[in-house]
Length: 329
Image 1: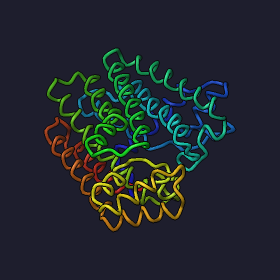
Image 2: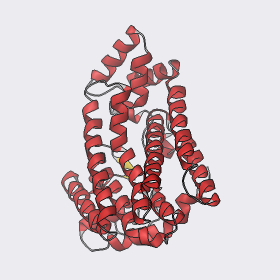
Image 3: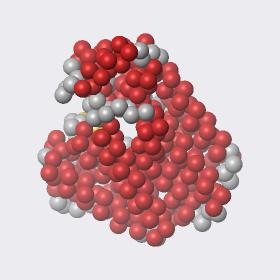
Image 4: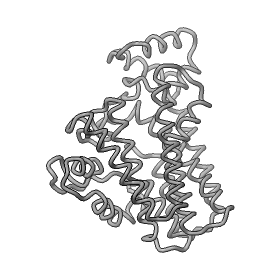
């Protein structure tokens, strides 16, 4: 699948910005550079940076609103570091051993030092964000606060079943807050008026929902060789992601009893994981989730049409929306 232009256009500037921010000789600095993909565990340079969706969207928004995108770089680096600090901590909390096909930071440096690396990365994120000015930095900190609250809800949901309303409230914080912030901070930096900022936030809200729903689909049906995680990983971790919630809502009494039994185990056995996936397939859960993701992408496109972006900018956003609808990792 062709990577959309928005995710290619700013990679060099973002890579250089991350390297400059995370330079240093301490083992924590090494762990941070390793985590974002700048080097291997020994400090040798690598090209393993992630999608960098959030900072790319921020720089794109600034540019489309008539400001030199480099003026948005400190905020973009801050936003990317907030995202990555959360991933270091998420891997510890979820006991995920792999991140982007490489051992997670905690598997190499231990849990305690991984927590320190994540904390230091958050401090570096705030430091960078403040270079962009108080309004944009404030938006990034507020988004980080919401994201952490969302992660807390996600962990809490592992111990109880929830409805779709609770699920969307959680993902709007855990995933949507930072994606919305990319557009919001871009609008703030460009001095956009209230109407444009409101539309930008709505675009980010809908893209955030679609992005997380796609993540949830991949968490059940994704190819482990592509995602870097075993197939059915969300089921093994007992995540109340959208496929599990839809299966519980759509199943009959016997199917719900089975799901309750499977998710109540201390560790879901491989055979039960396979049965849960089979049940979800028989209930057409994947198709329902795909339709929900597509609906949010269409809402994002509707809001996008009302923004003062260039014709090329609109085309680039449409490329990104198509990519998000089909991405495999």
